[in-house]
Every structure is written in C-alpha cells, then in structure tokens.
Length: 271
Image 1 (cartoon, rainbow, N blue to C red):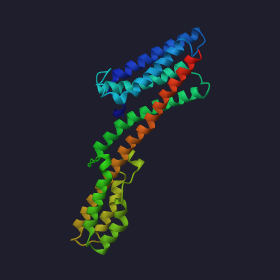
Image 2 (image 1 turned 60 degrees about the horizontal axis):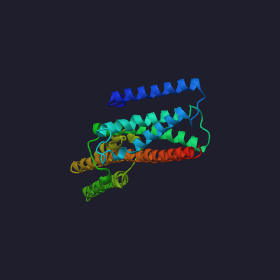
Image 3 (image 1 turned 135 degrees about the vertical axis):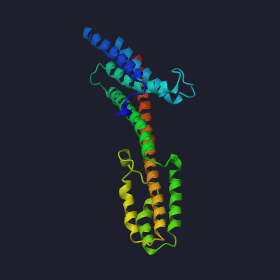
Image 4 (image 1 turned 90 degrees about the vertical axis):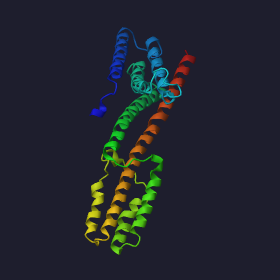
C-alpha cells in the first residue's frame, strides 16, 4: 500500500482541485443552458484536453528541453501523470458526459480512457517492479545482456558435469540443461518474484542422497548456477513487462492526439 502513496501529494491535491472546479463550472453552465460540445465552454474544455495531451506527449523531450517549462524532471513526471488524468476528465466534460455520436467521438473517448488507464498502470509497474527486484533478487543484469549471461551459465554447467557419474550426468541432462537453454519468460514473476525457486531447487536436495561425497560439491556448484539462472529469468521477465508497457501506452496516446487534431480541424472548417 505504501507504493500507492503519491510522491508529491501537493500535485494530487492541486489536480483534484482543478478537476473539481472544472466539473463544478461545467455542471453550473449545463444547468443554465443546453450543453453543446461545439460552443463556448464545450470548446474551452476540449481545447484544454488537447493542450494537456500535447504537453504530456512532450514528456520524452524533457531532457533536451532542460526541464522547460516545469523546471525539473520530477515535475515533468508529476504533470505527465496528473495532466493525463485531467485531460480525460476534460474530454468527458467536453462531451457533456453523454455517449458520443459518430465514430470519431467514440474513438476519442476510448483512446482517452485507454491512455489514462494504461498510464496509471505504468505508474504502478514503475513503483512495484523496481522494489520487487531490489528486495527479492540478488542478481542484477542489464536486460539486453541477460541471454548472453544465461549462455555463459550453461557453458559453465556443461563444463562442471563433464566427467561426472552417470547418475549426475543424467540428472543434469534431463532436469537442468533444458532450463538453461535460454530465457524462460513468465508473467508469474509479477506476483511471485521467486518463481517457485524453492520448489525448483528441491530436486538438488533429493539427488544428493545418490551421489558420493566427492561429487556432492559439484552438485552444490550446479545448484548455485541454476539458482542464478532462475533470478536472471525473473529479471528478464520483469524488465520486459516495463518495456512492453511502453508499447501499450505510447502509440495509443499519439493516435489520440492525432485524432484530436483531426477532430478540431474538421470542426473549425465546417463552422
């Protein structure tokens, strides 16, 4: 639950205040006149939503812009999160909280909701996954190098069992070597970062009873290599989840802004 607490509560409070004020103004105006998305206040809220989406899309450029106009990268991040949520609220206000008419209207609502919800999912992932890895994994590795590191572990394991007894060699070929063949990705690591490590290491304990005292150290070294492989699988799976999230969030957000520009251009042209 601590990970759900905002880093900067003042941004949450300010955004909530802006949203409540905007919602109050919209409800007051709607009580006085029929709400029309293409007139007066409807246009203002629509333009505000488009401006917030545009500014949020500039988030990747925060470093080249030297933090302008928010001063620091952290403020940029806070605006990206809360500005995105406000943009969705303003889209709903722009539509008068009614079901949209036409394909473009539906696409705007759906993409706005998708961009907002996927963004909030990203906030959770970026808080959850690094804490999960730091608190439960001993092995740290760069994402791109993990397949290479696993290949090295396999080579070490092959060298380790070379010249071993038939019992140890068969155990390695049947139960261990297939797992060392490459990265084994699993979404289960998001829930259980250990990936059932104790269960998967249990066969090593049972195998020890069938080996001579001279071979038991070799089995222990093999266990260490296998445990490191499991941690690399966890690292790869968790880092991959963060990278896949970008594909889920960024392209739809860019499509949303493009559709907003089209929507604005068409309405200005036919007015």
